[in-house]
Length: 417
Ligand code: UD1
Image (cartoon, rainbow, N blue to C red; front, side, top):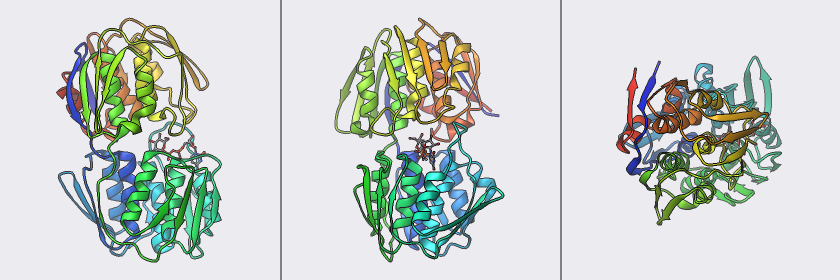
């Protein structure tokens, strides 16, 4: 049991440097399976989702070393093509291994993956795309068996721009025979990063960042050194923290364009933002203003991964606002916890109505998923008195020591093991 204890009330002041994005590093690690050479990934955060991914890849026969923030991984000759069920349950991203395993050894077995329980998260789009690329797939006893002996390029139209499915198909296609065209592809910056990584390995991918990606399969990929993009969600979490608690915060090593949907919103919320090429400062005083309506959407819309954090902002803002969650159907489980802290929120289906209150009070709350957990840290930092957050292990999946990040910004926060 891992618990955080926070004494709220301090403004946030200081500077935080952002490391590589979890959601970029995970598919990049998976893609490193496509070559027998070593890949060196830089600026890697120490978070448990990455530790899990490395464990899984170790079980497949990859070897790796971690030296500070530099990760060297080599998959000389994968010894297994079956992702162990006990790991897959912990990490939805284990699904990413389907694509590269098929590309490299033409076979893959994956147990139905886990991850944060934030909705049904089916796999139909992944599997449909792979089938169109000639992969024979059988599902039985909670496992997915894929035979990629006939893997080949194909034209694939996604029913929804799924991030994971787009990445999986890019990886399978990178070393398949022929050309693959993915239409209605996801446009997230992490997809562009995966394209850049695979191209650095000698791949031939164009179009990432648009809704049409073209992948020309190549016979052989080679090792490379790569620094993934900074984590826009960690950056956004800290900016929202600044807007909620007040103060003066700078985040460095960010790509402001990637945060545009958030910046557009908080700019309207009584904060002052200043943007430079790779850093953003926020100065906030007094009570933020709410937003009439905010809907989560695929990129470049407002990210679902910042929805819980922005809900905390709206909980203490002036006015009444509405959030519509369009991506994951159960991403409102933080609401019950925020209500314990004095928030006024009602939920019906995918819509939450938030009437801003003047203050939150510290309470004993519990994280139910990664981003909701981080949002509770912001709420605790704002609230009067003490807040304890149970199940902080969820937060560790995607934030490298959240207590250090917020502690260095002036929040009184400690971990109780
Ligand atoms: C990725 C991110 C996650 C983020 C999400 C949406 C990683 C490791 N995780 O998750 O942090 O919240 O994008 O931006 O990058 N869906 C289907 N069928 C499928 C696949 C998805 O119906 O085969 C649905 C899901 O249930 C969900 C929606 O599509 O409702 C979005 O899922 P997707 O874009 O695939 O998200 P992930 O790749 O799982």
